[in-house]
Length: 218
Image 1: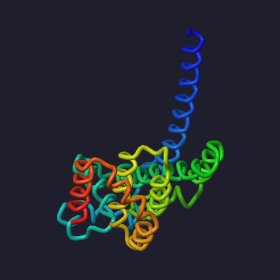
Image 2 (image 1 turned 120 degrees about the vertical axis):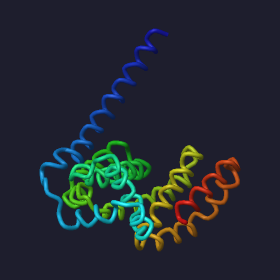
Image 3 (image 1 turned 60 degrees about the horizontal axis):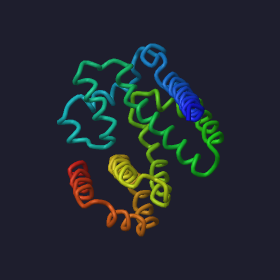
Image 4 (image 1 turned 30 degrees about the horizontal axis):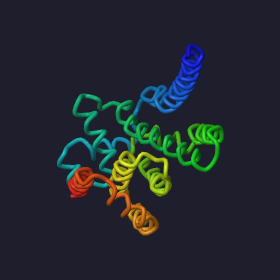
C-alpha cells in the first residue's frame, strides 16, 4: 500500500512538473515583454482599441465581439496600454495552442502532439498575430470547429463539458467573418452526433445553452 501511494505521488508530481513547465513556456512565448518589446501601439492596434472602448461601439460593430469584449473589460479596469490590449490576443493564442494540442493528441501520440504544438507556438506567423492587439487571431477559431467534430465522435470525451465548450466556440465563431461557411458544413457533418447529444443531455443544460446562445447572437 505504501509503495503504491509513493508511486502515485511520484507520477502525479512528474505530470504536474511537466504541465507547469509547458505552461511557463507557453506563457513566456505569448506574454514575455508583450508591452515593452514594441512599446508603442501600431495603427491597426490603435483602431482596434478605439473600436472596443465603449459598449455602444460593441453593439454597433459586433464583428470579433469576444476579442473586443476582453479589451473593453481591460480598459474598463484601467488597462488600456499595449500589454493589456495585446493580452486579449494572447489569450486566444493560448486557446489556439490548447485546441491544436488536443486535436493532434487524438490523432497521434502525446509526444508528437507536444512537439508539433511547440512548433506552432514558436512559428513567426502565430507569434505575430497572438502578440498583436488586433482581433485577427480569432480566425484561429476555425481549428476549434475541427476539434468539435472530433469531440462529438469521441466516446471517452466528457459529454456536458464538450457540449458547452463546443457551443462557446461556435457562438464565438459566428462573430468572425467567413467562419459561418465552416459552421454549416460542421453541423451537416455531425448532425447525428449533435442530435444524439442534445437528446442525452439534461434538459436544463440544453435550455440554458440555447438561451445563452440566443442572447449572445442576438
